[in-house]
Amino acid sequence: MTDKKLAWTTAVLLTALIMNGAADAQERVIPPRVLPAPADVSPQIQGLAGLPVPENYNVLPKTAEEWKARQNASQASGTKTATDMAARLHVKVSAKTMGGVPVFDILPETVAPENRDRLLIHVHPGCYVLGGGPAATVEAILMASFGQFHVVSVDYRMPPAAYFPAALDDVVAVWKAALKTHKPSQMAVFGSSAGGALTLGMVLRARELKLPLPSAIGPGTPMADLTGVGDSFATNAMIDNVLVARDGICEPAARFYANGHDLKNPLLSPVYGNFKGFPPAILTTGTRDLLLSNTVRVHRKLREAGVDAQLQVFEAMSHAQYIRDDTAPETREVFQEIAAFFDRHLAR
Image (cartoon, rainbow, N blue to C red):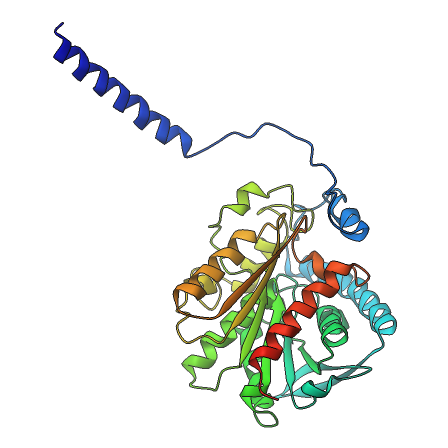
């Protein structure tokens, strides 16, 4: 074989090896490893990070009645958490209706002078199925206390009582009612997980309806893509000790809410929506969050659309663990960051 033929043959073989390697590199097998306790976070977050994955994380309800039973248990537990937290943080919670939708009016002991004419609308987490009733108020209580804001938390309808787009319709109805008493320049909308996706969906829907938009939004670790796209669905599977993995309860719960609708519909998976003209947004997630990629992708899409968007990522936190312990300094930091962002963008 001549040198030229040898060089050509070698080049072909190397190209084939590189191409095969590239194909193989599309998937990687990660060996088992131990996750050490994070050394540079508070003892409270160390404790949360060290919790094991729930043994029944992928034991899912099979009927509407079983979903309802799971819902009732979640509401009972969450209601106790909210009641205890409100007492510790000196926050007053009262039930009322806005736009025909049940809500909770949440007032801290002291509303900051700059916030006296402002209002925050809160949309609770819970995978579209869990966390209703007084349990809906946990995140809103934290925001009211640490941010010194008046907050209204939307107790939106959930399956099996009502399906998509009932939750979104309720959030929009509350927004319409709030516009009768407050200027949009003085209001923001926020919420985590399903509440984060509903916050984004509410802006998309309000824009369709030609309603004034809030002056800022705070979608925390949003369930922004129900189609399963996102690197952290793989990288943080079994590391996140809240959602755990895609076969945990949250994604099936969201599909239960979707009730057969296209999961790529931007009102269900907002990352596929058009973010042009969105209000300034602050997004929150953690390094162990199963929805880290959802949050990052939404942030990049907002930035690409020219939106003023801020991303805060907290060390060692799994999904929305910033609402799990009101004594953790990181929890206070999360909500004070959001409050400062809102302060910069809301009129007084």
